[in-house]
Length: 618
Ligand code: ADP
Ligand code: ZN
Image (cartoon, rainbow, N blue to C red; front, side, top):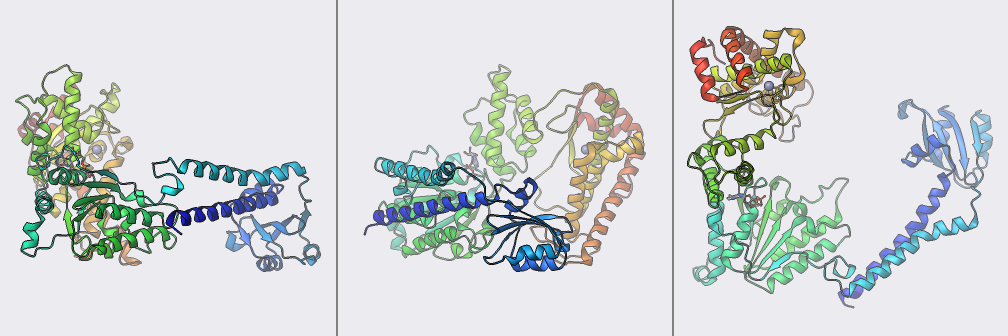
């Protein structure tokens, strides 16, 4: 028997099973059709009880009412018990044959019961309802088989086990290594692989072994796909491109068959590259599926492991995997001989961002006042994709304003948009507007007076996204490490908005506008305690990466107390700074209400004229 015949038989069996199940489904529905309304929902949502348990309930006096159906073979019982939360619930009980004493018992216990006759359905309806599902399946089957001959798309049953990888014999992805910046380590690694693919003799001559698998690990948009495309076109070898999710199938064995097929094709076309994006979809740790194992996925993963072991010496199939979640990958995948090279493709640093901006600025006319260095400074945390998007947005804005070149204004607006959302227009409501002005100036003044805080970039009353006003701070450099003093300064500054509302307008006038500030504050303070060992609880990691507490019980109260202590300390400091600087705050608010936006320099100028430097900085 060849594989196609086996597949046909399997599908035949599957359809038969479906028909059988279809009849079953129709049958059980009959039972419940006539049950009282409230009970149907509960019963069909799955509450069931054995007959024995039901008798116990009866004896304990927990049964309120019984409805018998289906010639007394099924009952819907209304019961209430401590284990049901003392709320009356409808439960289905199957009554074994020969339980005729049941009615006797029910009378004995004085239970309200009722027997419902079998539904008087017309014979025609019964036959029709029992036949519909099987007929649908048979029709589907005929349709499947008729199409399977011509079908090329892998969706017919005959093609289920075929790989869905997109394949390029001589790929022209149009991407070269010059188009990639900011991820030099990964690039260097790949340049080496390309040179192996081009001149394998050079490596084998000196006995060098080339890795079979390279795993790219990093957040989305950092250029992983870009790298894979670049090797394909630079090495000029066949390129198979597939996403891990394409191997995740409902039917056991299909994913594994697709992997087998992919590697079979690849090994007929060596040297070549197989790129598997989102490899975590197949490579998740075995036995970790929700509700026990997931046989299909495990088989698929096992197949992948086998294939990667298959070519003992690398004959020229290089598997490149990309993932964002290396932590959930099965350890077997990372063993030597499989993905033995792992390259982290992280978010770019300042120089990396500059490089990426240069790549994407190549085909865009930029005005000479646009400084890519300044953009790179303003965009920590941006991925390569975000930066590409930023320049693209700027170009769109320039077109909208009918300009031939992209100026600083468009770029700044694009940055604001990407970070904060689309701008609205400033509000007219004078009372709220004034309160928001104080709130924002509260953030800005504290941020600029605390020496451990980033400097103010801009304060504005133009709403953006869900924020009614905004204060932007410009980080001076990429921060890899953040000190305790900086975290405290961040908490104090973030509290500044609410504190200003309270000091100036009074306790009763504070608003809901601070809610996201408060979340930020709580998050930072909690991390200081549980992650960074920056509280009196000492240098202990109290929480895992998944926010699970490591020490249970009493410790959780101590953590909460510490979080409150940190926040309250910062709140006091913020209150002091706002009170001590009331004069300059009033003045800046006045200006802000007038012009709606103050840039960093304007803001600093005002501050320098009128402030008293705070004592005892956090
Ligand atoms: P990933 O596969 O890591 O999710 P992609 O490679 O698909 O990310 O990147 C999406 C887009 O972002 C690319 O097409 C490119 O325009 C841009 N990009 C991302 N990283 C870089 C980079 N390092 N250099 C240049 N452009 C990049
Ligand atoms: Zn705020």
